[in-house]
Structures are given as C-alpha cells and as structure tokens.
Length: 372
Image (cartoon, rainbow, N blue to C red; front, side):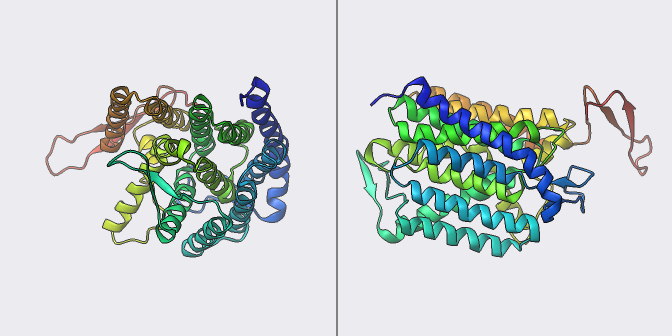
C-alpha cells in the first residue's frame, strides 16, 4: 500500500486547523477556570499573568486527527485513552496545582493502563546478533512504562520558553514521520503528521511574545503522544523506529532531563525540584533573547532529527559527524559562564574587573534597542 499526498498532508492540515481554532477559545476560557500562570518566582521568564490552558487545543487537534484518519487502525483505542487520561491529569495540575510525586504517580498509572490495553514495547533490536530480543512480561512492562513516562516528562521539562516545547515536538514528529514514510510504515507516518499539525497550529499563539501557554496539560499530552505513537511499529519490520529513532530525535529533551536528574541528585534535592539550570535557561544567560534561544534549540532538535534519518538509512559515519556537531554546540552552552552577555538588539552587558585585588567586579550595560 502506498500513501498519496492527500494521505500525508490532510491529517497535518486538519489537526493544525483544529488546534488553531480552539486556541483562541482556550485563551478566553483560561481565566474563567483559573488556569492562569502568575509569575511568583524568578524561575519564570514572563512578568505578567498568562493563560495556560492551550493544552486543550493540542489535545483537540490530536484527537480529531486520529478519529478521522486513524479510525480502525491497531492500538488507536490505547493511544486515545492514554492521551485523554494524561490530558486530564495535566489540566488538573494547571487549574488546581499538583505535587510532583502525585503527578508522577498519575503518569505511571496512565502508562500502566495503556500497557494493560495492549500498547507495549515487546522486543528490542538485538545488538549482539541478528533479529530482535523478545522481552519477558515484567521487563516489557518496565521498559514500556519508563519510555512513556520518561518522554512525557522530558517534553514537560523542556517547556520553559515561548514556543519551545511545541516547536521541538513538531520537529520530532516530522522527523519520525519522514523515517516511517521512507520505510513504508504509513500508519505511524499519519499519526506523526497529525501530531506535528496540532503543534504548528498552536505555535503561532505560543511563539514569543506568547498569547497563551500550553500548560502541563499540553506538554504532557505532547510528550505522551510522541512516546505512544513512536511505538506503534512494534513489529519486526519497524523495530528500528521503535527503539532507536525516537531516542535520537528526542535526544535534546532526553539529555536535558537526565542532566536535571543528575544535578538535583548531586545537590541532594528532590528530582521534582524546579530550577533555572535547564539548557534554555543557560542559553538565556549567555545573552540570547527568547526568540534566538528558542531558534537555537530548534536547530539542535533539527540536527538530531537529521541524525535519526541518517541512522535509519545506515549512514552511520554521517550520523556520528552530526552527533559530534551537536555535542560541540551543547558543550559551548553548558560551559558558558553567563558573565558576558551580548544581545544584537538588546542590552550589551559587560563585566569589568577591578583594579584592586580586594574590590568587587562591576557591570555596566550599554543599551540598544531590545527585540523583547
């Protein structure tokens, strides 16, 4: 079976139109239900209350797209039930607030329900020989839950700047869709196009300066949908997509999540403790405005997406070359001290060292027109 241009782009367009239509309604609805993000601490980069109910637009775009273009396909019920439950969990957090441990427990419950319904990673590529390695039921459960919950939280943690999570999710979905398409796996292609369409339909309202935030409901439903849809190909011909490709495509949020876990563990803090040490915060401290910081993160995600595509075609040397480039960029970001900030359209902040050894350093700002 082949896929026509209509099969590829109709799901993308419909999901995008639904998300774009629902987003303005969510902005109106947000203050009525109490889903407003009020800047209460220094971790937030906005300075005025913002609606954070945009997740309903993403959820609507994904659900309508799946209902129209994936009806009757395998595991559709599991995906739609899982996305619905994770959206409800996130919406409660947006409106009422929720302790991190309760949210995590809820995510595990949702992943367990989806696993029980039949969506699971049952085998992985055998790195020590040909074919695949079947997983026992216990290992299968652990791997599936870790994947679903891990990617859900990875996207949730990267949602720190206007348009960041929606853009990275769109890039990830389009990359996986392309890999699926060139290998003839059209069902995963359709589903990923739906997800990308919903993200891009929402993005104009969320890009800086944002008119609305997606909230936990949006970031969690995006992360869960990416994780669940990426394991649709749990058959021998699609093991490559299931195990390696999504991990490469989502390398940036996965790396940021692992760094957060390590950082908080070393500091003897709870893993759920919020801080301003994520990659996007470091880029901001290096002197970039929100738009340029987000563009840089998009670029890194694009590099990882191309890396995954090259890997799927067996171009391993080229794949390693791009990974090296991404690692160099990450190295620059992680080692920047943030003491010399330069903005082409903002403030140039220079740190002046004192003449006397016991004097304190001073800073001065050369003001130019700021884009933000």
